[in-house]
Amino acid sequence: MTVRSPLRTVVDMLTPTPFERVAAGGPARLPAAGETVPAGPGPMVRRHAGRLWMRHRLFVLLLGAGTALRIAAFAAYWPALEFYGDSYSYLRCVRELSPDSVRPFGYSAFLFLFSWSPSLAVVPAVAHLLGLAIGSALYYLALRRGLPRWLAASAAAPVLLDAYQVDIEQMVMAETVFAALLTAAVVLLLYRPRPTVAVSAAAGVLLAAAALTRSVALVLGALAAGYLIARGAGARRLIVFVLCWAAPLLAYAAWFAAVHGSFALQNVDGMFLWGRVAPFADCARIEVAPREVPLCSPHPPEERPGPNYYDWDAASPRYHFRAFDAESNALLRDFAVKVIAAQPHRYAALVAHDVLHYFVLSRHAEPPDWYLGSWRFPTGRVDPRWHIDLVLRDFRGEAVPRRYDPSLGGLLRGYQVFGFTPGPLLGACVLVGGLASMVASGYGLARARHDCLLLVAMGLALLVVPCATAVFDYRYLLPALVCLPLAGAFGLNQLRIVRLQLRGVRRRSIG
Image (cartoon, rainbow, N blue to C red; front, top):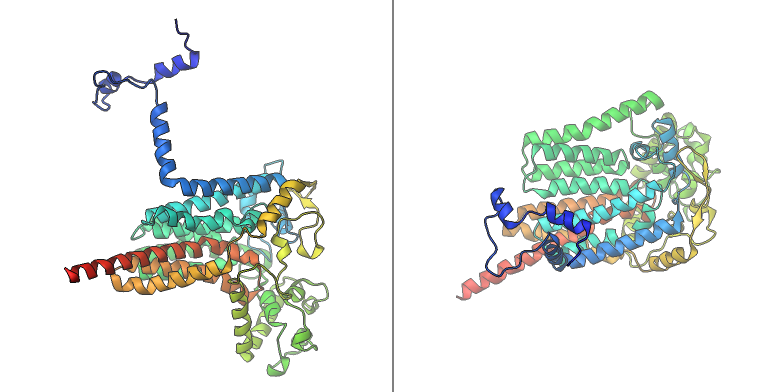
């Protein structure tokens, strides 16, 4: 006599037989003579899982590798990594629920959702999940748009496997949330041939939230509006998008004005722009107001430090003025604009040099750049200038002990030596996406043209705007991994379609 387990008995009771499914209005197929009827859903689930594995095994392997990297980072640096200045400021705003003069409140609002947690570890845990979700969303969008599975997986690989991306996810920093908001907006805009009114509204809200997380996204909203116009979305969709994008920004600016006295998102754009031009500013070429005299350096440009000194060093001339004050910010901005107008070629050459720096093969920082060590997995003692050596702070501002696993940290640092998205590959994505947008227009692929243009424009904007207004920093490259690899994948697919069309034309002409 066979003894059945209680669990097997319950499963059998809850699993309808083929005759019961027919009686309930289910599929009418009855078992054939001699056919074995499965006792439960197990075989069907296994077959379905097997088909999914065969169809998506490349992406599953990439997702598994990305998951392993994130688990290692989470275990190696408990409870989190923090970047002095930014992380402290974000956490302070959570406690005060007030807009900061330097950084928009969006990321602090995200942190507020988890401020109930007794451990700061919840922040990197959620960030790592968002990183995996970003890669999965890019893969799904690429499949939805008809890309081959290998090409769709290639578009998701940089986000999943880039060690610098994994490192920033382990930090209390805004980049991962910003990238997630950007990904959601891109998926909505590119999912359908023509975005609906609801989709346009949602994309506007998401890009507004991205701008309130990192202000560089302001230009992305304008690019998305241009995309809707080019796609012929119609006046109603465009108006809804603009309203849903502008309303949160205007509301935040009003809140900021009530607290800090200026209708803006922050009070540091002038300071950063002045720090950008101060290394080469020639005051002999501009009219210098009496209050601006401290901003003129007596040293020749080749002897001056980079933007990091002018922005943050205690001996910087900007400390002749009130820090993060609206009036001081306006004065610094006006001075910087005069310098740019007087020396446009020098400014353009500097910006172009820094943008091209993102596309070189190796990862290295030059003296004027922000320190690359800030975004590498730390192993032991680190340089204090990297801003990752100070004590951790939790949601309540209290000190948190660190726990570091040297074995996992060493493995991650070793992987980071080569485990990043090469600059030439990103440059190829820009070129392929741009070429496809030009070629596709002549072969009835207008939608593909506009999609490639949007992704390339967004990716380049995420690189150009920081170089033009602040400093070269590899941290600013990471959100571009959402757009540029996807642009390259879309571009390759469109070029493949054009090649197939040309081959068909040749065959018909020969026939």
